[in-house]
View (cartoon, rainbow, N blue to C red):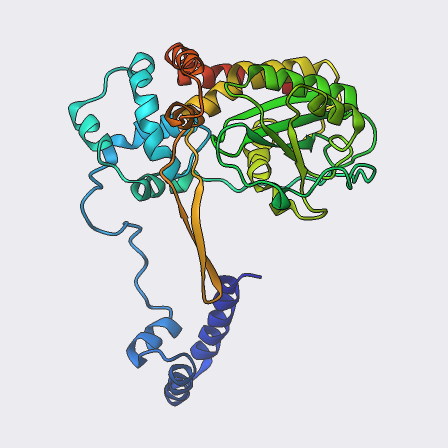
Length: 377
């Protein structure tokens, strides 16, 4: 029972008692009521006598928000951009607006002026009524123990921020049960650039994991230098280790501590932004959907996130009393971080620029919706 409901029921009992009393009894009741609830006597008499004027239903007076002309524009971009928070949406507007007029018509001069100065906090206030709550899924990590001594824990070896060092994790599309066969999503994200790739496999056999990992490596705009994962058996197996190690320059391998999900914080965050936000928590047990999901990840979902959806990286944190204070950098897309990096070859930057100029974020968002309907059907 809510506090509001309890309050109304208690007030109703007081009003019923008040109606049955004579003048002297009501006076004593008012004394008791004011002493207990700290009301003014005049207001208490009207409250117990049920004589308060009805609410007019009008909102608070005041001028209309100066950003009201932006509401429709912001809602359209926010909806197509996977409902970014204000701090990520503010820099994203500059990436989406060049394509906006082609889909929805020209912007008014007033709108262009306001878009140039709207803040992240204002964007959050404009969109507060449209925000939704997130759900939670099952943990499907099962430990693989044979290779633990051969693969060091990440914190003991490297803390690289340049492009090329990646975390990987698997997400089970199992619904409410891990029994039987179903689709898995694999998520790969780069520490330095936040570039993220997703792939799908049927179950989590080592052959399928290696095949998709090889495909990811071939499509990366940088050289793979390091690979970090949890203690799940889909990663801790000789087939994958052999693929990553038996080469001219072996990939540096690390793993997280058992039962410490925060060791893989980068990719754990992407698990929500990629498979969960896209495919939800339902069970996907049709093997024909795997190819459709892979096409969705590679051709639409990946380009939309890497080129048009900014993200923030933690710069510093410190403790003040009982709470942690965190400071993040300016939100940027993975594409922007790679173009600013001195580690990326000019040939790769030119290829990235050509790819960026050929993409339209609104068309990518529409393709995501149409392809997703086929998968979930």
